[in-house]
Structure formats: structure tokens, C-alpha cells
Image (tube, rainbow, N blue to C red; front, top):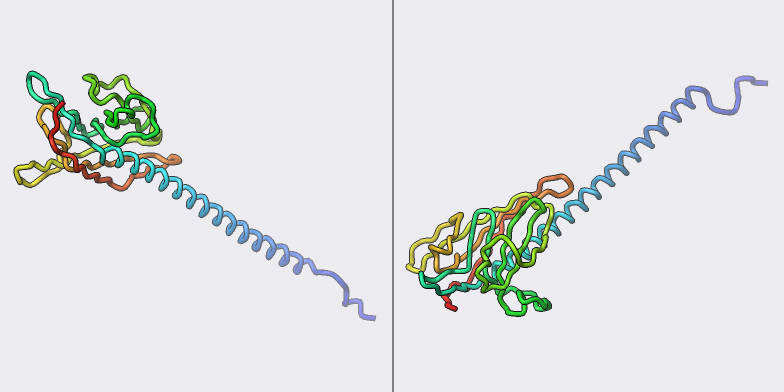
Length: 212
């Protein structure tokens, strides 16, 4: 009778088996964690892309409808368009067809796009009111709370044939025509991470002078 032939694992074999099990489990766990992180990053990227698209589409739609509305006063004409480096105000034909307020019913409305501590906002007013340029009144909409910085530039293309240039301000007391394009740069924060939107350039076709 051979007493050396015993059933079961030796201590060494048991240690090797446990070690291999731990290694395999660690590899599987790492793979699952990597897959989860990749999925999370993909979801964050999709959300940021969607946010960028919504902001860009809304701002482009409003600015593209800019209308050269002017009011004649004793001291001259007043163009209802004001462009600053960090905010813009204008009369637009881009109105909500389902809106029931006086801002939309008229077919034209005054819109200002700006940022404050709450985020990116849009203010809407009746387009012909004298206080359109004031930073008060009207209806205010919060477009996105994650916007941290807003920059605008305006392309000045004179009608006398001179070459145009980008400027940081558009003074309605000095200009009686609209810029031919507006450039917007928007910086936001998504899930505590900085996001720089692609630069937006919006062309404006309606530059003909009108009087009221």
C-alpha cells in the first residue's frame, strides 16, 4: 500500500490557485472600472456637446435675425443695436411664433444677451421702447447657468468699399448700420471641468437703414 498517494491539494497548490484567482479578479475589476469610466466620459462629452449645440443654436438664431431698426430724434437717428465686449443688444425678427406676449406678437423684439452671477441670460423687451437699452425690466430667461465668460466682436464692413475689421464695441450713437457679422466666444464649466465652445460667427444680412 502506497501511503504517498493522497487525494486533495497541497498547500503550495492551494496558494497558487488563490493567487491566480486574485489576479484574475483584479484584472476583471480593472476592466469593469475602465469600461465604466469610459462610459462616464462618453456620457459627459455627449452632455457637453448637447449643451454647446443648444447655446450656439439659440444665440445664432437670435442674432441672425437682427433688424436695423432706428428711431428719428431731434438730434438725429438712433440705431437700436448696442454691442459691447461682454454683452449685445439688438432688435430681432427671430420671435417665438407660439409666444403670446407683446414682445413676440409684434413680430420684432428687443433682445439682450449677457452673463451675470447666475449664468448666461437673455432679456426680451418691446422693441420700440425708449428703455430698451436699460439693464432692467422685460422678461429674463436663464439660458445656461454653467456659462462663466462671454465675449463678442463685431465685423465692421463700411458700405463705401473699404476693407472691414473686427471691433470690440458697436456704439449706436456712432453707427447707423449693423455689423455684417458677430463673433461669439463662450466659456462654460460642465461637471466642474472648463469647456471652451467653438467660436461662433453669425452673419447679418439685414443692414439697410430703416426709420420709424
